Image (tube, rainbow, N blue to C red):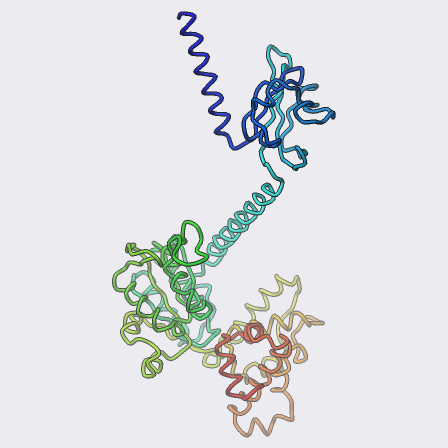
Length: 464
């Protein structure tokens, strides 16, 4: 290769290096062993409102206007420094310093400004924390899904009517038909939905739950079907998958479907018929393979008569119906359930409770359990929190249950069980509201009923 060609090649390489330096978003500077600047880009020189040619050839002390030692570790010990905090012309920066070594000797150093402002680092850290929180959320959701693989054998009950429902559910689990689970709040509708999923051919797929009553009407469509980027103000960059897409090849459980707004019922009907969804802000249909299990504690036929539920949707989701009996209709399972909850809370609290006293058992047999199995679970857990022995006594029960065992209530008993139940239910609501400081959501959770159900009972008993 001739001398002219070699010089041309060197010039090309030099121009390429300069181009790379200027394309970098980092501020870059290189110094020789005498602390003289031999290379710098515009992003670095801009800290002094100068151009690279204004500082190249000067020592860092001249260029920086600072007599303090610079690049001390990189130049003197050959040790690289990453992410150090420095002040450059009055501006706090985050930078790196790396020694340049040739033939085993330090011949200079390279400095790069990673963040022009420390606030940029804080903003990045905040973004990373948000991403980590999202990752933790989805990891917890995944773990929750794996933890909740209930089978029908884990659903407790030997009552004839209850066993018949379980047997029907077992038979339909292997089909792909839509299932409607009906029953009062707290009867175990979600457990049946989990078991239907676990014992189906989709058991290894996702199980996704949506509470149709808990999601605001204006957010329900995007929650179910997802949305495209820019679909509405505040939409996440890149859009978001809806619950139906997340449940692809698995099961979606639409809890409290009777509370779904009419506008959404029409869209759900189309999804069930066409087996495809459209994200909010998108007109491209997307095929889905999802089994739908719906549940409600409301009488859908009454809602249809009041034009609050679509009749065509009712027949679409009512392919197979499971009617779960309330606890008051299967009191022969009461002792079995008590044994289960006592074992569970013994493990949770580290206690050795043997069971309940005969008086407590009699009170529980007389109670109508408006909150069903969930209410029973809450009563046992409450007892464990105030327990002072190895057996649950009447004094460990909520006040409304204690009153069932008082002699002064005999006249109420003679007046009829419904009157006693109403008084006990009203007392339970009052106690729950008092315990929660008037917070109705928390009170409903304590009672084991939905918030909508609590509002109805407050209105019924005229509780202010």
